Image (tube, rainbow, N blue to C red; front, side):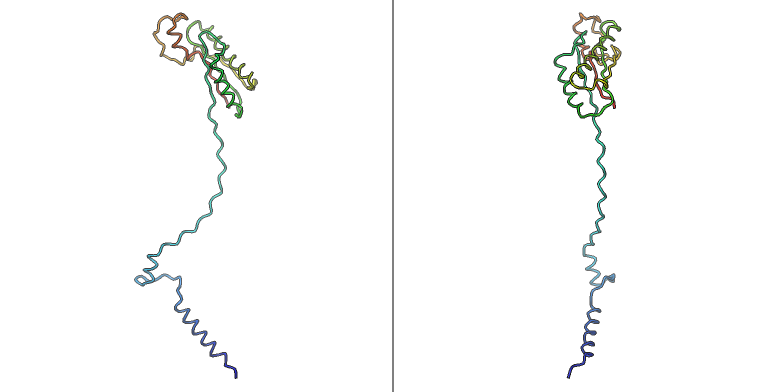
Length: 187
């Protein structure tokens, strides 16, 4: 004779009910109970990590201003040999740059007549632009201007130094920074 499946089913149901009754649940524990104390001392679960935002596009490269100042001898417009390396370095940086115009502004010191200094500052700017063009700078984008003695770099530093003449060596030396061409890119 075969045993009836009914007693086995009842036994399985009783075991399942006991297991269900004592099985831990995710319900809040009552204050003061042992399981509440264990939950309070247990570390809080880590928050779910949010997905990282997509990377932002790189910021446009901001190029630093590209400028150079070239100095000249007293009453001369010829490029000094020790100033040419400055222009060569400028050209090296210029190769990878986009620009609309290259400005070369000539200046002169205050010794001599204003019309002469205006013409001298123009020649100095032209000499610099010609040098740059001979080394590969786009001549169509080169622009010259002449300020003569109107924008002194030395300011009042050379004030009251005696006669305003070429024979005053001390004054000629003091005004050396006024005899220049300033080169800058315009975007």
